[in-house]
Amino acid sequence: QVQLVESGGGSVQAGGSLRLSCAVSGYTYSTYDMAWFRQAPGQEREGVAAMLSGGNTRYADSVKGRFTISQDNAKNTLYLQMNSLKPEDTAMYYCAVRRSQSVIGALAPGWYSSWGQGTQVTVSS
Image (cartoon, rainbow, N blue to C red):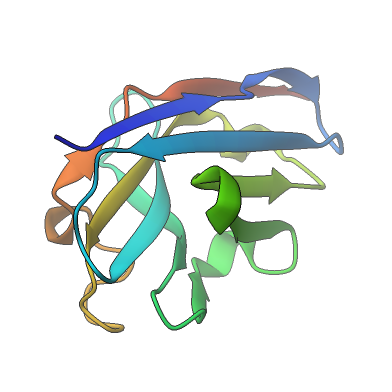
């Protein structure tokens, strides 16, 4: 059974930075994609950044140039470095994993099968 555990959330002022981590265990896929999603109260879950099995990355337009997704295979950990944070980045952030699907649905929640419990990010103005 795949388990994902996020950490690193917190409260920061606008312009600040945070680094989220997602420790992954129990997956049996030979190739897999991982991604970060977020959900603000009253809004739908949206894709933020994805790391595909071939090393390619995808970002939502709203975070391009500010957020960076990376992966440490030795530690089975996914990261999201978030810089120049804005109040509109406030949300619960989730990591997710799926069997590799190439770029199809890379940032679509419905394409991912395993999820973490989330970590809260709050950005104040």
